[in-house]
Image (cartoon, rainbow over all chains, first blue to last red):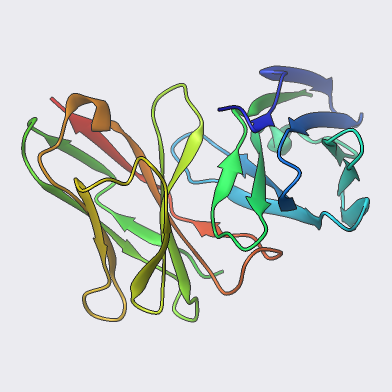
Length: 112
Length: 114
């Protein structure tokens, strides 16, 4: 069951540049998408979300883009900082459901 | 910033034993959840809890599992007769409303079944 897919297990980016993390989904009934960041030995930390009726949401250095026709979303981090190095999870919620379906995560390394 | 607190951080138990994982959600949150992550795999939904009852559960959450909010502040996950494959990180989460604000997760309990 891979309703939410993050196909890149890892990504390395130079400090100050843009990090782009990608996520694909298969379930058309998802109505919200969320991005989480996770450090080792900690729980996931909520970053940003987007409703399925929008195509962009921005919060500081973080922007999420949603392309419903392609069933694709991406998280942009600009500028990237070494403290952004973590595993990033894409998650999706179905309409009328409390359940989040997570991707496998992408490990981001920001190189100073 | 308010936190979801989980105890213990690490629990080792023998196969067949019962374990109780404890969580203190954020005080003004109304929705509570348990997730787990087996090493190297995805974070998986187990159960959601609202208004003192289970509102949704996954296929993983079978009769071996139960949840309880015994005293208005704690939220517990009980695993009866643990199996080796129950070894995982268990995350508790809570939220005020679903979903735009996201869920606040605790740091997790690492359960090791030997």
